[in-house]
Image (tube, rainbow, N blue to C red; front, top):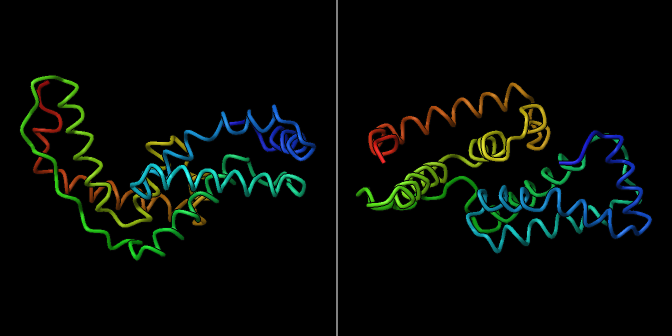
Length: 187
């Protein structure tokens, strides 16, 4: 992510002035993480790329009016989060998504295959969480966003975010408890 709020303001001034290098720097700094967040929320890489593109498009349109109130990354995450919520609502899948079938629990002969299976199980358990818990966990644990920034992105208080994280972790522990030996077993 880019630096503090003031350096982000300078970068946005350069973007507003048509500085292509500033635009490339912003995309390089934020694109992968936006696509990752949207991908986890939507479960569709192409849709995640569309969301990231739309978030940047909205940032470019905002460049001339940018006010140094928040970091660019926080703003982009918030826009991407809202776009994902809009897509989930339009698809009728906001938080009532069915949990996908679990992958075959048989251990693979190679560590990479085992790791892939573990990741699939965890992703399936994540997909079964309510949207807000899933988003909170994705921001804090996968995207390594701090609690206060994640709370701002989601439009909730830090206490509410911590509650979402706690409930999400507890549910994941419950959902994955029967598979503990397979998840942390020998490779």
